Amino acid sequence: MYPGYSPPLYAEGNSFNRSVMRLLLTIALLCPTWLCSAQTFREAAVRRFALRDTSGRIQPLRPPAGKLLAVLFLSPECPLCKSYAPVLRKLQEQFAEQVYFVGIIPGEGYSLDLIRQYQADYHLPFPLLQDKGKQLSGYLQARVTPEAMLFDPQGHLLYRGLIDNGVVSLGARRTVITARYLEAAILQKEHTATTHTKAIGCLINID
Image (cartoon, helix red, strand yellow):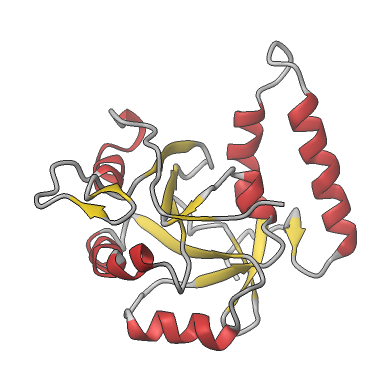
């Protein structure tokens, strides 16, 4: 539990908080652009989510003070999520002092044993959280795995999309990677040149 932790806006298993979440989502979607921004609402509220980790504990998406937050949507059975594990591991090791990395596993189709096995087999050094109801995935409009999102310490979105340009399409990879988008966003922080790319990967079915 981090210092200054406040009760999460959404905690899995809490029906009241789910109702609140649905209401706020409706407000965000219906709010006209001249009155408020759904994107700004989405960015600020991500830090109020909390999901269960592989030990069953509820963990807030609230990094230690001053750190960036890297949210990585992953699937234990997606080939790209497996092949990108070394890249993600290297990024976490390289930027551990500046960035809090967390993996999000969307949906109910993956058992805790499968998630733990994926983490162990591919040596992922950051926590993996279950988004069983896909509330967070839907809220952030994540559509595929792997997909990376980087937030600043205040919860504002800096970058979302591809980890790098190593994937051209499903089943097609570049011989040489020429753009490392997530790494560049971490290094540049608020001055990120590329703020959005279209992620390529295994589809997340958002109901």
